Image (cartoon, rainbow, N blue to C red; front, side, top):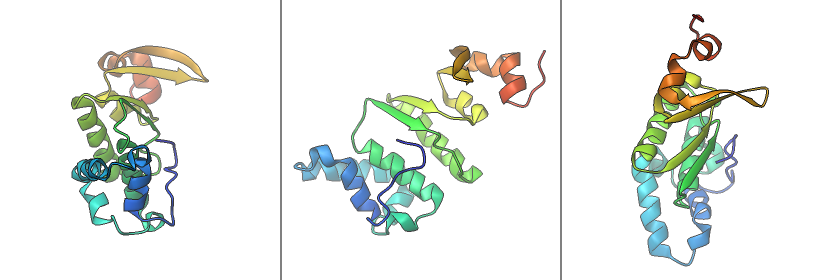
Length: 158
């Protein structure tokens, strides 16, 4: 899922989701099953299914973008800055859904500046600085690393 959502604004939410299932467009029952699955994850998306995607709030658009990506049933879901520009309540919702997907066995590659939230749900983490890997390892270890705390989590270095 690219940064900045990239929805088809003049199309409805449901039409955007159908585009996510384009590769299986000749399997209407499977498209319906996948739509039901993303609607279960994102009830708000189902409520807005007939609304034009361009008229949704930023958080709702983000949910539609993730739901559209999930229509492909990817083995690896790549999310680029999914919390960018969203209200804290929506950020928590998005991170909870990412955690749920991970817990259900989906591999997720999350590129995110919200280090605190990311380290809470990640198994492994890589901290990049100026394009180079500064530190990497299990997310729980990085959350306790004094360098990471000082630079990214608002803590003091030891």
